[in-house]
Each structure stands twice: as structure tokens, then as C-alpha cells.
Length: 321
Ligand SMILES: C[S@@+](CC[C@H](N)C(=O)[O-])C[C@H]1O[C@@H](n2cnc3c(N)ncnc32)[C@H](O)[C@@H]1O
Image 1 (tube, rainbow, N blue to C red):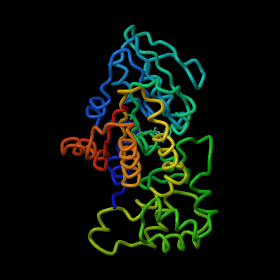
Image 2 (cartoon, rainbow, N blue to C red):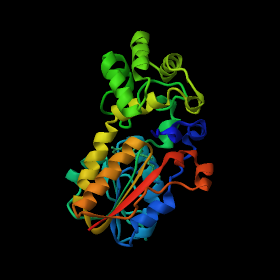
Image 3 (cartoon, helix red, strand yellow):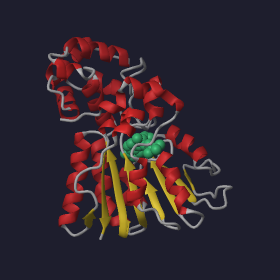
Image 4 (tube, protein in one colour):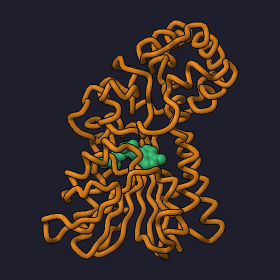
């Protein structure tokens, strides 16, 4: 079982809001094969690291469409992607840079791509899943077990249940199932029982303390990761419906890509990677895709050294036939 260790490490969380270092940047751009004048969709704009590299290669005749659930991320990347803010959630202004593409930023889930993007209109689609450093580094968002904050964990703070509501209102069995299914945590029942007894749980620190007391590491392997890692991953996935959104995106991808268009997905834990692998394999069997990566690409030692988040990254790519 592989878990999203890299996204909640001290090194990673500690970088805070200084900036998000894009993972597998060169590899993603190479596999997208960005062509000048094309139309590309970045399903997870985040702080715009991958998007800005795509935009540079598109030039003025191109079009970059970016989705993010998180309005704060879009606000930050809007400045980076250098185009004026019209005040609308959907903008398509030209930047002052004369060789810059049209950039359209959309506040919404990439699960909506199938409804919002016309069929066979994209030359490439990138998804770099998970959370950004902006989200992890801001204690007030409640994503990190390294900092104390309110138990929120919503990528879109304007909608859906918070982690606090989930932790305090699910019954013990449902809570255990969430922790087991989305965190692949073997001690899910014991943790769920402790959480229910400790209610109300209002902060990340309280949550960490309860989990740490209930699930002490039993051996060397367990000591390698923080006892709260898997439960935090599970709650985040559940709160943000991450796996359902990913399935919806992958279902829409072959429809919105042009023949020859590229799909590139970077995932950070085995639940995501399995979904991506199956969707691409099934697509290939049905004659929709040519697989470009037989095995997932991972980060080099060098990248892992400079960016610990890349440790658990896996990239898969396919071309629409
Ligand atoms: C790992 S970050 C992307 C970083 C980006 N590639 C960069 O270089 O700055 C993931 C981003 O995807 C967003 N996100 C996650 N799930 C999403 C979804 N279902 N729909 C839209 N955005 C999503 C998160 O809010 C976060 O900003």
C-alpha cells in the first residue's frame, strides 16, 4: 500500500506559502507535447507552475483553460498567468505579453469538464492531483497535521461538509469505513472508536492527539510515518470527493480530447494511481487510447531531494486515437 507521505511531510509543510514546486514538470510538459496555437486544459491549476510552462509554449494563438476548486489558488495563479481579472469566475482576457495565449480560468471541479468543455476540442489535458503547498501551508485550511488549525480540509471552502462535520457526525462504523477505504488504515476501527469517544473534535491538533494515542506505531515500518498520515488522507479524500471527481474526469477525457490529443495525470497515492491505470488500460482496450507510459514515471532522486512531495508522485500518459 502506498500513501500520500510526501504531501504532509515536515519538509513539505514547512515550505508553507513560499511557493509550490511543480512535480515532474519537464516530464509532464514533454508528454503533453504542447504545440503552439493549441488548446490545453490544466484540470488542477494550483499555483500555476505547470500552467505557465504550457502557456509559454502555446504563444498568442493558443488557449489555456484552467480549472481549480480552490478560489484562493485561482486568485494566486491568475496573477502568475498574467492576465487581468475581470471579476468573473470565468475570464478570457489577453495578457500584456503579446505572445501569451488566451487564458480562461474556471472555478469549479474538474468533474465538470465533460459538461463545460466541447467534445474533441483539446490538444492536451493535464491533472496534477492532490493539494498544493498553498493549501497545506495554511493552518487555517486544516489540511496539515503539522500545524494546528480548524478541521476544515475543503479545497473549495464555499461548498460541502468540513472534516469537522465528518469527524463529529458520522457514526462510528461509517467513520471506520472512511478511514479504511480512503486511508487504507488497518487500525481504522480502533481510531474511529477513539474519535467518537473524544467528540467534539474541533482542531487538527486534537485530531492528531486522539489518533496518536489510539494508534501507536507497533514496529519500525509503522514508525516511518506519522500515525495520523492515513487518517488525514482519508478525511481529505472523503471531504473533497476526490476519487469520484477523478473518475468523472477520466470518463470525460476521451470525449474532450481531439484525435492525437494527450492525457497526462500525476497522482500521489495508490488509490488514485489505480483509477488512472485502469481508465487508461480500459481506454486502450476499447481503442480510445494509445498508452504512452507502460509503467508510471516517477521522480528522479535529484527531484525527490529538492522536492520531497515528488517522492510519491506517479505520472501516466496516453494519446487519444
Ligand atoms: C497539486 S496542486 C496543483 C499544482 C499545480 N500543478 C502547480 O504547478 O502549481 C492540486 C490543485 O488541484 C486542485 N484540485 C484538486 N482536486 C480538484 C478538483 N476535483 N477539481 C478542481 N481542482 C482540484 C487543488 O485545489 C489544488 O490547487
